Length: 219
Picture 1 (cartoon, rainbow, N blue to C red):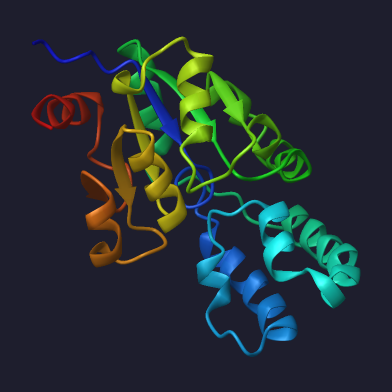
Picture 2 (picture 1 turned 135 degrees about the vertical axis):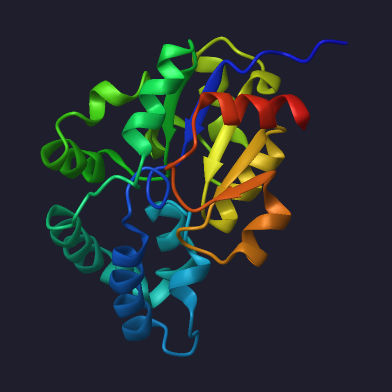
């Protein structure tokens, strides 16, 4: 039976579109050491989670009263962040579009964060056909809900979509959605990413539709 054609590429945001994960590691590292010194490395565990998920699990009970202050710090931090595209991304996106492949951002980030993105990178809106944020799905990564909703937004089946992810939660989300998964080595080492993805890349340089489609056909 002929395999479905590749019709859509679905991208996480931080660590996949923007080289922002090291910056978030600094911010959340500071907050986690302040509020959860008993749990070293927590900033790595929460990658790919929505802010609501982080608060529900780690800023509950007595710490609930600290949420507003953490949110204030986060908003200030995100407003000053450097939103630099992962190397080669823009050319790769343009090549996908030339070959009729739809593109979407599927991120656990919320709208306030996205406003900072739009201010810093005004052309961001023109790169992608759809942008789904945490407000657009009921369950966040590692649930497959966000990627299945993105496929539905294009009227496509999961078998026609490929996911680009970097975090463990995100990689598991793409896997659970039953989609081909490309793992970015921007946040985690290859030994962590490889078992949860079909191919691993460091950036989008030397990567184009032809190479992706060949891998698509081979998997």
